[in-house]
Length: 410
Image 1 (cartoon, rainbow, N blue to C red):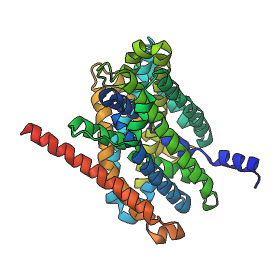
Image 2 (cartoon, rainbow, N blue to C red; image 1 turned 135 degrees about the vertical axis):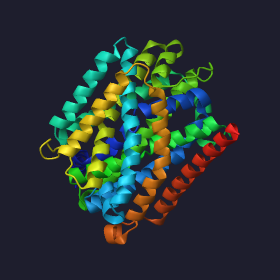
Image 3 (cartoon, rainbow, N blue to C red; image 1 turned 180 degrees about the horizontal axis):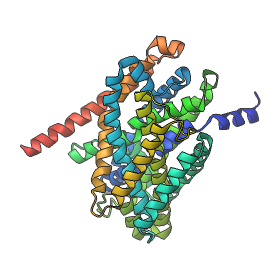
Image 4 (spheres, rainbow, N blue to C red; image 1 turned 120 degrees about the vertical axis):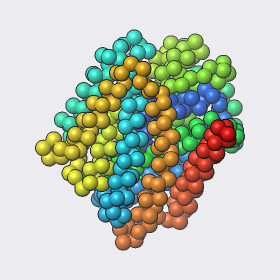
């Protein structure tokens, strides 16, 4: 196959990997990275290297299962471990995803409020737009819209350069690990891992590959799609941390969400950086509000054995469409409630995702190493080591947080 044909073939196959990884940088993710940069400067950048390696391994592993089996992850959990296991996983993920959806719509509202647009106008507009896109559009249309929107993440790279960081310090902090035995540092470490490698990603990626109908013969292109997406998403995360570390950390400015970061950037990096950061937050928030409810509808319907798919109609897949509709509608209403604890929901959803992730990875590891399911496509040993290492690190960090909290209470 000639090079131009290979490029065209890759373009036709790309989508699930790039979209899944990039939309992981939603409002919760951007908030986590912004807070990390503002609170600890460049010192958390090194975490992105092992996290990126883990992300590539986990996403490729899940994509491989989707290509080989033609089924979603929730489907495989139900078939191999029973309805009860799938149900408990479904409940935990629904709670985490609901908080994430609220956080994304809150990020959408906050980003436009920076520009003087009331949330009571922009939230209904955003909710109706994404509802129509998914319920009335096909998988191909939704995928094209999401891929185009992923291009807008470059705004964070631009704002990073406009912040004029000290690049030698950035490089040193990226390659030299620095650990602070501080509960907030540990909590943000869990949140960074939990927002970069989220449970919903694994379900969405595998289900979207199955719905797109990608087979074993296209595994190479899908693998490249996944790796490309993982690298891009953590490059974006890198520049978000750098932007806030270069501007807010030296001034001792504490923030609680990404919209505050955009506002705080204005005196240090200028109006353009403020505008780019704010509009990029709006884009990321809306994308997250589209995909996270889709992922939720996928895994609930798979766990229960119901018909599902973005290309389906309300008549063909009523449960899928109603789950999506209710998540969008209720989340929008919560964001519009005066005094709703939106920041608490954002942080809680990131931490809950970090706590749930080991359970999802353990199921995925067990399935991908099942030769009856995967044949010659079972995991190489190196992948198992990296994934188990990720599980152990998350459990250890969670234990440190619990112990620290108990000691403080005592």
